[in-house]
Image (cartoon, rainbow, N blue to C red):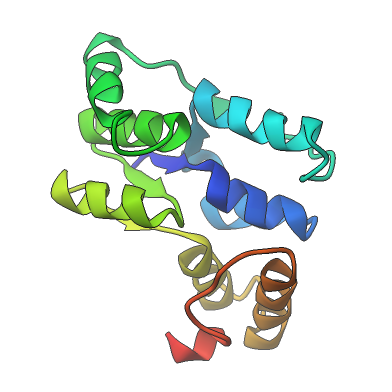
Length: 156
C-alpha cells in the first residue's frame, strides 16, 4: 500500500532531527507530492524547519483524475493535504497526516489514515525504539509545537 506523507508529519520528525525514523518506519512504501515539498520548503525558507535531506522521499505527480479531485478538495484543506488525499483516493493509498480537517475528509473518502503517533508506535512495535525513546522524541515534538492528544505512547 502506498503511504502518502503530509507536511504535518514530515515536519514533526524534521523538527526533532529524526527524519531517519520515517525511513525506518515506512521504508520504500512512502511517497509525497510536490505540494507537500513546497510547503516543507516554505517552512525551511521561513526558518521554521531545520535543513533536512529529503532525497530518500519519492515525489509523485498527480494524474488527471487526481488533479480534478485535488481541485475539489482545495476548498476544504490546504494543497499538501488535498494532493495526498487525491492520490490516496485514486491509488488505494493511506495518508499520513495530523491535520484534523484532512483526517475528517479522509474518513469521508474512506481513505485509511495514520500520523505521527502511529509512526512512533510502529517504531516501538518493530523494536526500532523503546517506549522511553519514543516518548522522549514525542516530548521533543511537543516542545516544538506538535499538539499531541496524549502525553505518553503507552496511552494508546
